[in-house]
Length: 167
Image (cartoon, rainbow, N blue to C red; front, side, top):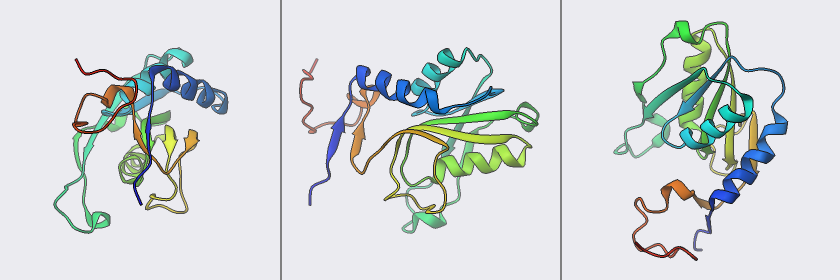
């Protein structure tokens, strides 16, 4: 059975963020954007929340391990614990697929003494390795391969993209 794809436009992203924002209650002390996927939605959320305390996390998992559940992450970049301690931190990524990256970041934030909440544009509960967990806030549930507008030209050779003309 072929995997269904959803090719999103910038207008779709605005609509997803519009759907996400009313779910959030109260003030956040910091945004922690998971690169690269969380940078654009995180920037949009930061503007909407008028929040300028923005941090980034870069997490990589080895790809050569057959059982992905046994892969140990490498943090290429992560804020110092003092930047997270006693703060309500909104962790932002574009998608919760397996949940490995975002739950790893949650663990680091909580270990530093922060209070972590998560926001993603898309949640894929069917592929999540964490059946008892999920994002705090999400705009849509899907089982499709999501192609965000910022990923259209990268690594998409041979993928038909309706309405997008090659340069």
